[in-house]
Image (cartoon, rainbow, N blue to C red; front, top):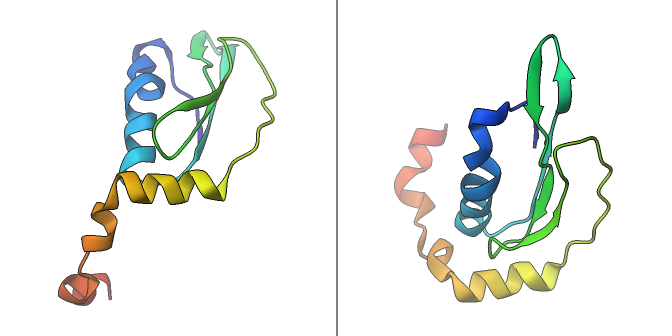
Length: 98
């Protein structure tokens, strides 16, 4: 998920990305621009977050290269911990997606 968030969007990496991982039971690699460009100070804070909302890797406010591994087993555990996606009923809303 590439972004270019500035300082006022700090809650994105702290709150929203972990929440989206839990909701969707997946890993997210969040890549945010860092440093100063055209007078704007970018937040940095790129991260890799697991499907249970746990931080796996986090960059600081400067440029960084993060390399990590994700696990299919972690996704399976998240589906067991948060089983609500199994309750979806796509037949009820299939017409809306056409």
